[in-house]
Image (tube, rainbow, N blue to C red):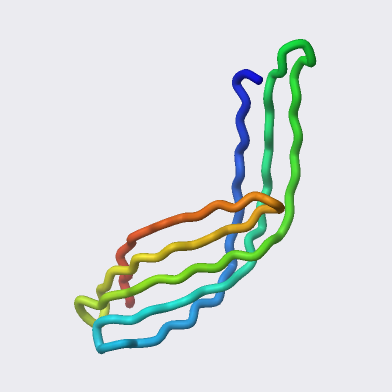
Length: 100
């Protein structure tokens, strides 16, 4: 195998449930659907080029914490898991929350 690659892209639609621990601090969980497309390609010695495409819809879920600096500005840290057939992809993110 030489030069093989897999590209995965998708859209995640999720519901989020939050529980306020204090006025500033909260914990949350989310569950949703991950609609994905995958494309794989490789060049195998003696067999030539290989490519395949697949798509599907699988479950996604996550947990996280949030902290509000003010009523309109906060920060959120979360871990998410995305299923794509028999493969898993996880994401750890930190982001700003701006409410208007």
